[in-house]
Image (cartoon, rainbow, N blue to C red; front, side, top):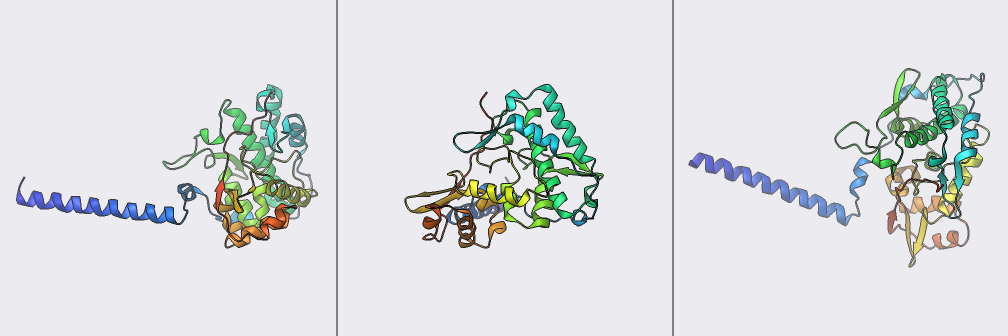
Amino acid sequence: MTRKGRMGHEAGMRRLRLAVRCALVLLVGAASAAFSFDQLFVPKKELWPAWQVAGTRQAPVVDHRPWDDWLQKYHRLSDDGIARIAYGAVTPGDRQALADYVDDLQGVPIRQYPRPVQWAYWVNLYNARTVLLILEHDGVDSIRDIKISPGLFKAGPWDKKLLTVEGEKLSLNDVEHRILRPIWDDPRIHYAVNCAAVGCPNLQPVAFTPENTERLLDAAARAYVNHPRGVRIDGGELYTSSIYRWFRADFGRNSRDVIAHLRRYAEPPLAEQLDTLTYIKGDFYDWALNRAPL
């Protein structure tokens, strides 16, 4: 190797060593800050301005009765308080009925309707399309196994354009993070949309409507906060679902704000225990499919 070549090789090795050291520093720093790698892939609120439009149209009424009927057949609330879906029991006819409902919703000119109608529409569309997605990929153990999102670092199905509404192609992430979260700015959104996982807040047993939204949201928040997969206190320290870390900005600026949110829905004795806590020790989440046993 020539002198010039050796110098080039040594310079390259120095750059490589520097890059490795920088990466190690970042990893150590992230670990010391209790940073989790999955946080890199949590979608941010990013308003899609076109969906801010809301009209005054009242008729025809957006009909969610097919979703109600479907849930009555296949929604199961287990003894452990976790809602599951009997995916394995769904008949071909009822699978088609669910697909027809999703198709019908995609034909609604939803921007012409007022906000309460839009809310129920987007949440029901998100949840019904998620259930249909599981049925389309029969046998998966987790929704994360449905690896159809485009892009090298994309996981699961959430970035795949599965819907078309008013001519716009939408993914589930578009619905949740570019429409629901930024427009309504309500942390209870996380208790409404369901990702087909055991660790997720329960899929409601009825469709959302403009009339029942507030009641369902508060009931869903109470059910999740007071369930061990939402909040646990172990050895005097607080552990929460990862939802409160992934989307902490929706619940407040810091752990104290998250705890204040939890306290709002906590029942005794959890509420009294939360009064004495000021930080969150750790978090957890179960991505197993919310499949009901046959």
